[in-house]
Amino acid sequence: MDVPATVRTALADRPVEGRRCLEAGAGAGNAAAGLLDAGAADVLAVTNDREHARTVRERVGTDHPGRVGVFEADLRSIPLPDDSVAVVTAHALFNVVPTTDLDVIASEITRVAAPGAHLLVDDYAPLPDGASIRDLFALENAARELADARPALTFYPGGVLRGVFETRGWEFDRRKTLLDPVPWTESHVTAHADTVRDAAARIDGDLRNVLVNRTDSLVTEIGSESVGEMYSLAFQLPE
Amino acid sequence: MQTRTLGATGQRSTVVAFGAIALNWLEQEGANQMVELVREHGINHFDVAPTYGDAELKLGPKLRQYREDIFLGCKTQERSYEAAWKKLERSLDRLGVDTIDLYQVHGLEYEDELETITAEDGALRAFREAQEQGLIDHIGLTSHGNPDLILDAIGEIDDMDSLMFPLNPVVDARDDADHDYDAVLQRADQEDIGTLAIKTFAKGPWPDTDELPEHERPYANWYEPVDDPETIRERLNYTLSRGVTSVLTPGDPKLVKMVLDAGDRFEELDEAAQRAIVEQARHDESPVPEQLHH
Ligand SMILES: C[S@@+](CC[C@H](N)C(=O)[O-])C[C@H]1O[C@@H](n2cnc3c(N)ncnc32)[C@H](O)[C@@H]1O
Image (cartoon, rainbow over all chains, first blue to last red; front, top):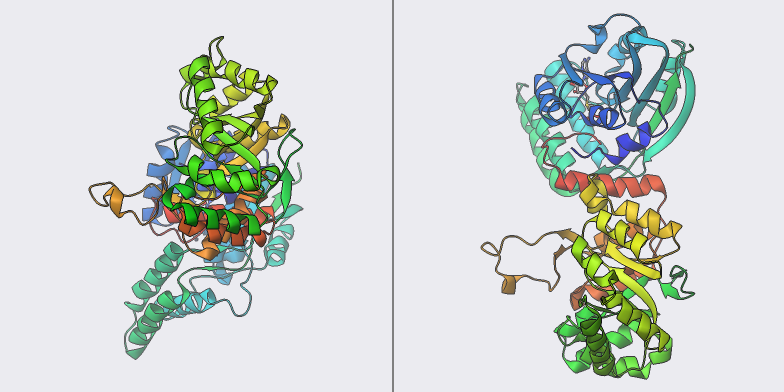
């Protein structure tokens, strides 16, 4: 598969060749594909989503037989021993991690990282006021809060995530801008709208229809929108 | 409109160059008006070919009127010495001019063609003789073929002054060797070869002719183009920011003006903004549904 420009750019200045890597939050496996392409010895890809696990096996596993291990597990307790990986990527992970889980996941990532390990944290900066896509994300958060008692998305400022890892002994190396603006394409808008509808379906009462109707009209209103920043933070643990 | 240096030629070409194939779809008077429009935007680099229907003939009158101001590129699909000479003379005749500034090997596609043109009785010998006689000034090559083949051609043809090849964010989003025109761009820069981008406004191939017969296509392009001013501007800004000398206008006359306007307003994009456009293209094309992230 094609490695996205975001992943390629984030990995460009990281030593990946020959190392064991962890993709924390495997999603579509983009970072896993990038790591393998950059010469990783192997990639352990962790996700708590069965569909994502399957996607990664199919998209990435088949291209690189024997070099990808997909773990369906929770990052709050990573099923790996201490000091077992040399590179960790959290590419577009933390925006789906609620504040309540942030500390635990950061601690777990730190635990499994070997001395001298490298860490990439790529994520979205909070969107500026006036971005229309914010309304869609607000609906998504409202629907998920009402349905599952947790938000769907949290856009952490880079400085916050930097602090979270520095507190745990990671040395900050650099910040890069991966995307500016961030292209929220029609396919993103549609996919996010679908998650609102899914969550709304689990809510009883009037709010369900309100959320769905507002989502339907927002999708047409927004179409697509390029706004915001995706950044990349790089860290290293002392040897 | 801004200009950039075309490799080692000394020529400074406008960042948008006029692909005169568009004239083929117009009556003579329409063709004249189009050339006037193009010149109003300051365009000084024109490109034509004998295979573009009547384009050479229709370009002729205005080309002769403004000959001094126009850097004229032409090309040939002939691969042999004799045939290339004949085709060059025919183009000079149809255009009604004495010289062509840039004569290009047109549409190199196969490795054996490269062998043929570089051989003793190959087209390039005709090019070089014509150059000695002052009929052409510079030698170039065009291809939408395999990037590796183009790299080979750069290696084989020492006196190559310009290269024309596809460049757009959709192509850049793919990272297999068949789409690695970035390698061509880098190499051309190293060798001080001017770079001319084609297919900059391509959205994708046309649907199958069963679905959309050729005569029903809304545009006379080889590919289905992007056709709204904002996307056209984004494509142009992107491709020029990648560092090519000039971008060719698309083949359909309806789109030419939009590209000229975008050229007047060209703004360099930084790398994060370029990646944003590549990401957008990747998602528009992506086979994986429901990707929420980048
Ligand atoms: C947006 S995706 C990340 C994109 C992916 N890194 C890529 O490059 O394609 C977020 C992933 O993190 C996973 N995830 C979120 N919270 C998690 C948790 N607590 N434990 C395990 N996986 C989690 C999600 O299931 C999803 O697969």
